[in-house]
Image 1 (cartoon, helix red, strand yellow):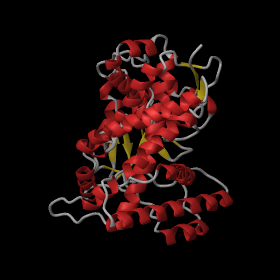
Image 2 (cartoon, rainbow, N blue to C red):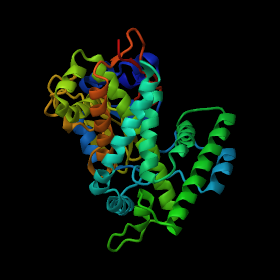
Image 3 (tube, rainbow, N blue to C red):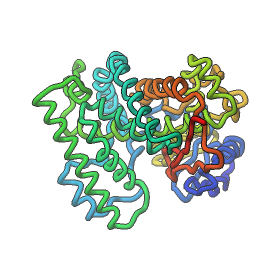
Amino acid sequence: MAPSSLGHEFTPLDEHFLQDPFPFYARLRREAPVTLAPAFHFWLVSRYADVQSVLKDARTYSSRDALRPPVELPREVMAILQPAGYQPEYPLLGDDPPAHTRVRALVGKAFTMARVSALEPRIRELCRNALDVLKRGGRKAEAVSRLASPLAMSFMTELLGVPASDGERIKRWCDDEKLFFIPIPLDQHLRAARGVADFRRYLRELVEDRRRSPRDDLITSLLEARTEGERPLNTDELVALACVMVFAGHETSTNLISILLHHLLRQPGVWQELRRAPYLIRNAIEETIRYDSPLVGMMRTTTAPVTLGGTALPKGERLFLLFASSNRDESVFDNAERFDIHRASAVRHLGLGNGIHYCVGAQFARLEAQALLELLVEQLPDLRLVPGERVPYLPNLVHRVPQQLHVEWGA
């Protein structure tokens, strides 16, 4: 395939692009399904079949650098991070077989459907509590900061078995780590590094506490997880793994809840239909992930020369797999640009990954979203977006989430 200049038009952090990136994705699929984005030094992969083939071929497309910061961390920053045991490698999301196979199997022993199901009553209780707090504030609210983000963090503190009061500082630490992935001045980088170091120390103390005094929580289950012929997870691995799970779990749930509310409330009649037929909520969640993926995409790196989508790629090239584009591929989804909570094929989306790196917490995220939506349509049947309020999206390459979502209810 002839080289394309379309990658020069990839401006994912610009306000106009953030508001509606989908026309650009459609052009990619038609004109340049695998094309270089020179400003970012990676290739955009936009068609469903190509994205799926990469996700299913861990041998040719490595995850080792999936979460690598775009620039080398300054020496002064590393001087703060290293004494706290910081490692730039992230298990599960950022490793390949056989290391990934071992960790995934051990996590699977701890993060079972039985554990998710056992947490369901508590998840519903947390949703009720969050909704009570929201309603006590009046008949209008900013839903990301008042509902989605604090509720997602309460899910994570519950899963880890740490005090809910720790949620606020854990959120600050996660925000600090996100700064590692964008260019910032050294003084900001140093401040963020201190937060990241504090988070690693917090998690290390948590792991060691559970080693001494086991409890009925995920960290204890990970400590006790065993698979035949494999060594158990050590403290360093558990600290890194807990960091990944907290960060990914909170971000994914916040994004999903926020985007769900945005689209379900902006489509005429959909909220009322869910109230009349709450059994549609499960499919509405899948359709929302397909239509506007909370995770825009993920990185992979070629381990050998390969041809993808008609484009020859050398070894060592970074690829950005655009889930947000592949989920609107017209060859897979009829009327792909239409939001349809009745869509039978919605569950085929790639918004939570595919293959060996399919999201380990996918069922947990779905349960959280479902529990909240069931309560919302029941208790706030007239919930609506505040008319005239703009919905700006966060400038972020990987995560897609409204920065603000103003809602109201009542007369």
